[in-house]
Length: 116
Image (cartoon, rainbow, N blue to C red; front, side, top):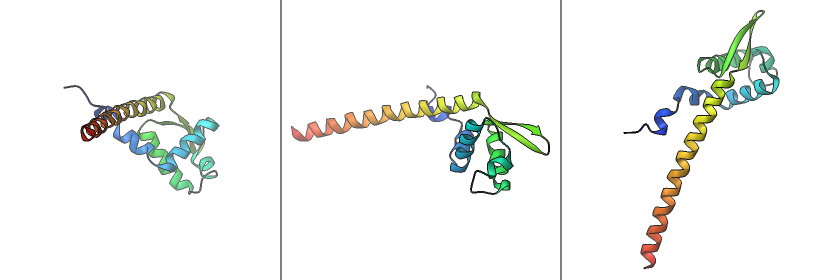
């Protein structure tokens, strides 16, 4: 039996990306190139502590990498892991496109049967 798309998707990765605050942080890090919990919290409507917790989640799934920067950590997006996430999204999208096409063909066949 072949491996389904759902089995190929990293649930922890998608759980991390599923949060809008973390997606906003990733956007900011991509634009700025790097950031700390302090610099990111200045651009977001959440506390520095909340930002630090969100960064910890992103770090655990490998979407960001931390390096020491004085008393804080400087975070950068991990390009390889982000590319992996994008590839998974593309794969899931393709699988759903195929499912929707199949549903469409079934619905059309039912419609034709009713017209006969």
